[in-house]
Image 1 (spheres, rainbow, N blue to C red):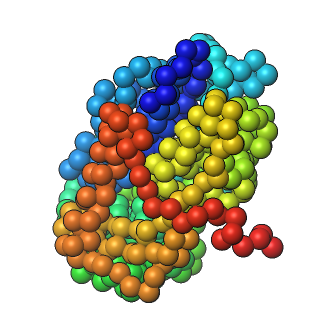
Image 2 (cartoon, one colour; image 1 turned 60 degrees about the horizontal axis):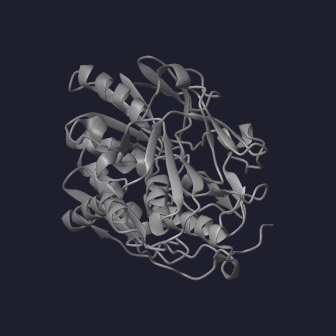
Length: 389
């Protein structure tokens, strides 16, 4: 670590995978005053919320095991970044002075208001509080009650599989194609497991209305549904826009390739809420943790008066859990394009479990030894990005 005398105030907004590892990595210098603002007193393993809903995993970790010495945790909600005065305004009325902000507010699920009844009757698994509500409702239902999961992406698949393994009667409404991000072998692997475990998969059809005890499909069919779980859609908190900072179409903070806001060089983004060059990386802890370290490095470079590096990271693939005893691992090229192969069964389940465990373990390692986290790199993205049409 580098010894210095004058303290630099850094506020990290968001205590998920990106924000927590960023806060830890900032301790590469000793002259930093680090405050982590998070709405919850515990870290949430978001990639395990489908397990939490099913009742077989806690999904929360005490920050005392994940944050390095000297980091102040403030349990509150940031409501506005006042860039002129350099303060982060909190819901409690408190204001935090800063020299730099790391914007790591994460993402959330989006239940579309355009679908009648969805906001009123559908449940989300995207955040801890939503998952708690869903878990409670699920426990109230008879074992044979019909459950509908809306969304054929990875979250929808994992949620449907977790419940089906417990013997629940599950229908998965994909909207389009099941697991569109996977290769054909990967989709076939997922589809086979779901079929063997009694999940009814509806491709090419969407939910047009959610009722208290049913869903109405786009083709007019009405299917009984004692519980409807909505996993389709993506959204981010509106803090950046509320602070007068430019965002992309979904509300992610627009940055350059060093993760610096295009409007304010004292604000650096990481994780799901970052949109570098308007080309955000896929929502995943696989992307968030390296982005958190790189955002911290950008702040450290600015403090040191050196040019920050452009982001450099590559994807390895996706790993989908199918209950507790099987999974599908989809290898990918560095740009996240799926390879025409997959690993499935018990081996994939073991890999997925190890990856989930290592994500939290890596944050703890960074707390104990800043600079410990390493990741796969693929070179600067500028050479690999295709210009927008």
